[in-house]
Amino acid sequence: MTIEYLIILLYILILASYCGFELISKIPPTLHTPLMSGSNAISGITIVGAILCSNELGYTTVSKILGMLAIILAMINVVGGYTVTDRMLKMFKK
Amino acid sequence: MDIIVKLAYLVASIMFIIGIKKMNKPATARNGNQISAFGMLIAIVATMVQLDVLSLPEVLICIVIGSAIGYYVSQKVQMTQMPEMVALFNGFGGLASLGVGLSDYWLKSVENGEIVNNITLISILVTILIGGITFTGSYVAFAKLNGRISGNAIVFKGQHWLNFVLLLGACAGGALVLWQQDMIWGIYALLFISLLLGVLVVIPIGGADMPVVISLLNSYSGMAACATGFVLNNYMLIVAGALVGSSGIILTNIMCKGMNRSLLNVVMGGFGQTSTSAITVGGKSNLIVKEVGVEEAAILFDSASSVVIVPGYGMAVAQAQHIIKELMEILLKKNINVRFAIHPVAGRMPGHMNVLLAESNVPYDRLLEPDDIDDDLSNTDIVFVVGANDVVNPAARHDKNSPIYGMPIINADKAKTVIVSKRSMASGYAGIENELFGYPNCLMLFGDAKTTLTKVVNEIKEM
Image (cartoon, rainbow over all chains, first blue to last red; front, side, top):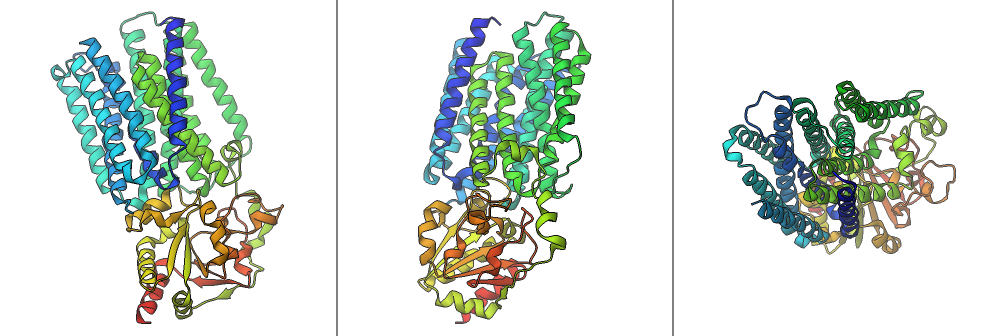
């Protein structure tokens, strides 16, 4: 990775963080628990990295085993996080 | 093909942002969560298509196993257990990112013998550090919330120095790897220290500071995902990780403001331990409190025209949210205005009380923030405090020596009558006596909240 490329990635990081700050500071306290479990599910995005890491045949290498472990964990996060958030948000009634 | 996958990642990133945007109103939040979930599905499918994952059955099996466990847990968990579950899931997120970072290092450096450039290498090291701290830190938080280990702060001499030295050790391990890429011992050292640090940074933080810890760990799990984005040069991972990271930071900040303490003060830990001995010697109370019986309380409720309920962690412990909802309904039938005032740090995670009350079908427009209800409190007949303590302590307004001085509170004492449902005269988290209980307009309703409230509701029904 070159320095130029790193700078592009940093741009993305800073803009996305700013966007996150703007959006999340407008979320009412009532929804803070669903926000946490929902954002927890989003942090399961690391599943994409985990799948990329498991991109090899066979399952004897350390890297593959680590990748597969990461897939299971990230998938628990994704599915568990979104469904429990949905369960909670269903309960919020006017 | 590659372009299509990249476009899919872009779409997924946009959907995450829209999903979070829609979380700003309870009416659209569910839809927002679904949009976000759909974005995740697109991202996962695109990755699977790109790698032709169908030829890798073991990957598919892992996905199915993870989904099944996640689904099972999410359906089984009770709403009172939400803080534990979020803590545990934060830990999984951290461990998954740690696994990705480590796997990438192993593949490139150990198995293929490639030269990894320094920027990628630093990203890998950062991923391992944050992922490791998030994992063990979240597990300790989970065990504390779950009661597996004591929820109190565990402090010892030289704790902060030890953490500092360990952090230096982690940096040294990382530097070793940067200097000689195949120095696996550097990676091992970094891994071990980061796992140890996770435990050490969370143990000194006690019970009611848990909302801060969970928010902070939530932020870390996002940052770990973000760091994997730098390892794999993936824009979408960076965007999603940054969203989660900033969400956690904002929540942490709100929690700290709610307690009028700095993040550093919370993270240093030990709050409520030092002040206990100084103020309430032997836990003996000097306050003269007035007790109220179930029947009398029922009469008071019946003759009121407005009631504000202040719930706290005690309500969750007693599982009193359902009976509170019944109380609300019966009072509403008698044309008594019932509202709830919820302090930001009530409970063990941000929004904890709101979810419990939503579960028992209390409409969310009756749940108000302290600022929104403050002006009305002096016109309120009864403020009913259930399982809350420090957040209604007037000492925060005037007693400069109090550890909670300056903390924004719900001014319950301004109401005509305050009824406090409490098991005993034990102090709150801050370890100080609540002077509100000695006020002339304050009445104590002793006993388990669920049992006494059931009796009160039955009394009101008979009136």
